[in-house]
Amino acid sequence: MKKLSLPVEFLDLIAKLDALNSFEPTDLLRILKTSNITKETLLPWSTFDHNPKEGYGRREVYKGGKYEIMVMSWCPGDYTAVHNHGIAEWGAVKVFGRLEHINFKREDNFISTIYKEKLAPNEVLAVNQALIHQMGNPFDENCLSLHVYGTSTIAENVTANSQIFEIGKHEIQEVNGGVFYDLKNNEIAKRTPGLRADKITEIQHYTHLLNLYHKGNYRGSQYNAAINYFQNRSSEGRLNTEVELDTKQILYYIELKKAQKLLRLHKEPTRIIDAILNEISDLEKYS
Image 1 (spheres, one colour):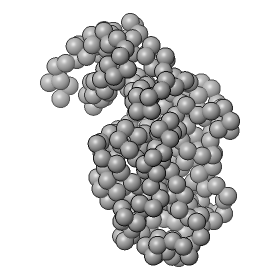
Image 2: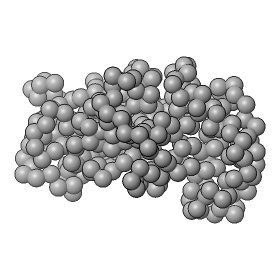
Image 3: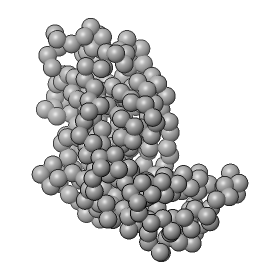
C-alpha cells in the first residue's frame, strides 16, 4: 500500500523507522512499545476470514525497502508452523490481544522445545536471525498482531528464505511466503531432509496439525501420520525415561491432554494416550 493512503498512526511509525540510522533491537522495541497504533488501526488489514488451511491470516501494510510492516490475524486455534525469519536481520512483534509463543533450539539437524510463554496485550517480542519459534492463539478470542521485519540492505522480500522446520516430514523447507503447515510443492523453494526433534516438539507438532484439520473440517497430508503417532504402542509406558526436565514433564501432560481431546473430536481411538496420561496423572511428583 502507498504511504499516503495509510492512517496517521502508521505514518508516524514509518517516519520513526526511516529516521533510524541503524536498527538496534532496543530502538525498535521502544518504537513499537510507544507507538500510538491501536487494535482499531489494524482492523482494515485483519483477515479473520482467512483460509483455515493456512493456519493464520497475514497481510502486508507497507514495504520500506529495508523493512516491511505486516498485520497478522489469529482466530482461536490458529498457529504458525515452527520457523525462522530467513534474511530478516531484526524485527519485533506487538500483540493486540493474547497469544502463545514457543521458542526452540536447533543443534545441527535436531530441534527441541526450550520454553512456552503467554504474550499479554500490548506486549512486544523481539525477533532476530537466531530465533526459531512458533506463534499461535490457544485462547477463545480473536487477536491481531503488528510485525516489523528488516534488513541492513534493500530487499525485494525482507522475509525471503524463511525456513519451516517440518517435524512430521523430517525436513527443513525454505519458503518465501507464509509459514504454514502442509504447503504444496510449488510453495516450497528448497527442502533439506534429516530433521529430527525431541518428543515434546513432536507431540506439539501433531497436536497442532489435528487442531488445524478439525478447525478446517478436512484431513490434510499428515492426518494419518498424526493419528498413528498417538496410537503407537511403543509410546506406552515409556514416558518417564524420555523426560529430562521437570518443566517438560508438565508440558508432556498438558500437550497429551490436548491430543486426547482432539483425537476424540476426530472420533479416533484414544486407548494408548489414555494409558500414558494415567501413568502421569499425579502431577505432584513433577512440581
